[in-house]
Length: 460
Image 1 (cartoon, rainbow, N blue to C red):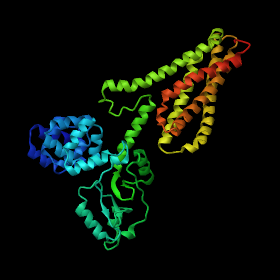
Image 2 (image 1 turned 135 degrees about the horizontal axis):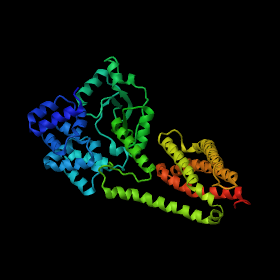
Image 3 (image 1 turned 90 degrees about the vertical axis):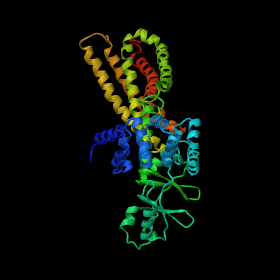
Image 4 (image 1 turned 180 degrees about the horizontal axis):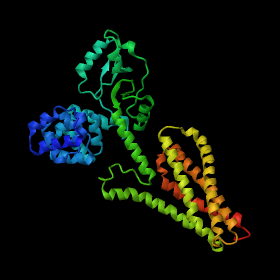
């Protein structure tokens, strides 16, 4: 098979030469889903020419691979009739995703370009809540009846399956249209032609509600390892399906959003390279301001221990070391717990189990860093008098503080996401910078309290 760059260059050359006959002949040998990712890398002007000359199926499939900004620009390069034909050819889920990203006024304009039947479908899907299963489902699926034979079912698939979203799964419904089971086509192909569909059913299926959150759908796909799941109404009649390719997009979007939040910014919701600079600054500035105000409390905490610092200036040398160690430990714990929550590795009711692990891990990590900090001061004191005659007490203060602050940071970093989840908020909001800022402020209190207890009567 030719590589993508070669195919893209061949098609681009045909378009540039305006060889529409050769273009149709070249693309006719490809499946639309195989060619679409390659075509999506062409320039918008080349795509406009291709969409005017190529098949609607190829145009619709390619259109779904473009970024929203490019989709909008491309539609402006087409005539109204061509744009309307393209929008009508899009699968319901791809069209809903596109319309959902548009300003309301522009989305209404696009709706007005659809055929009456397609407009009815689009409005029905857009009526579901944002990020719900209903917004993502497609209405193109194949059903069969339990009393049919395998031969009848396969004949039905051949007759009605050409434009369906997937043929890997057939949904079996009764005479009233209620879902009975789902059936992998593989079982049909391997079964005797005169066998009844009902003999192939095992009752092992699951369904989604149209108002369910897309994260719920993602978890079900992972749990049951399905390529498609039915969406049913209140009477358990299938009204659409969600396919695994939709879930791959959801998984990517959710992971991207969580990573951005963990980094201390709002979710961008657009590619980094295409989002407007002003919007990116706004989304990053809000968290930076919050974190900056939080870090100002560090100065407040230090001013509270001003007398101690004045009497034992050596303590100030270790402030960056102390607070960064606690913040790093908290960031580690928060990242691990948030990811484990996202993967469903434990439930909120297991919070005590998480706390016990972090108590143990935080203590061991604190002892490791505390020992290193103690040895560092002890070794330096053999060659310099920078820590004074009470270097052993200073080393003990730093070592004990590191144990306490690393343990504290681990507990805060692990419990904060669980607390936010319990309140119905996104755990990823407890970003690494946020945890680090919180631990910085409290770490100073731990440090100077420990110093006062250890150095009281000597330096303090």
